[in-house]
Image (cartoon, rainbow, N blue to C red):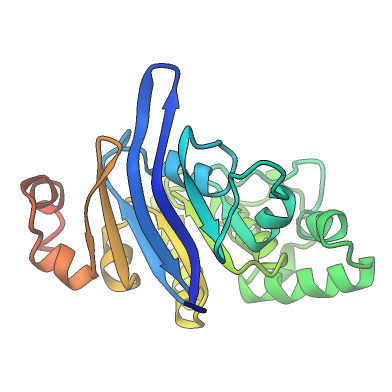
Length: 246
């Protein structure tokens, strides 16, 4: 299947004796916007970190275009350049300007010339509305602006998939909208995205696939219409009960 980008098969992750993920299976196809929802502590962020190899799964496999990225000798940095990550806490370099933050990865990993990396960075900073701030340091801009820079930085690497780990949870409420609107426009342009989120309206309105996790397993998954409109399991109904009338 040419449009299959990621396949997660029987993935488990333990920290010591604590099993955080158990027998996780799901797939990501080109153009999918998959939202992963669930209560805090259900394993959502750990799943994302395993997919990006920031955590190594205890067992199971992660196939990227059919190749197991957990296998010995696999080139993790090259893989990560195709599967970008936007973190909850921005992870910007505080000693670099907004523009430098968006150039450095391209230079180091993709070996682009400074001119090419700068042009690419500017293109995406403009896309997220941050060109007026290219000479600012992270401490001089708001949380919402930092997250938009983090998205531009990830996009500048030309990833095939973007992973978002609760990208709005560290933001003040008035800044959430500006980040979600950038993510909405990326979804409309066909960007393949995997989003761990507490923003149920985003999961319902922007995703084409929703995964509900509970206690380290995938409890239920399906289209937003099915999951929000007619959840099959009691745990899913309980979790969604406060949102389904919104």
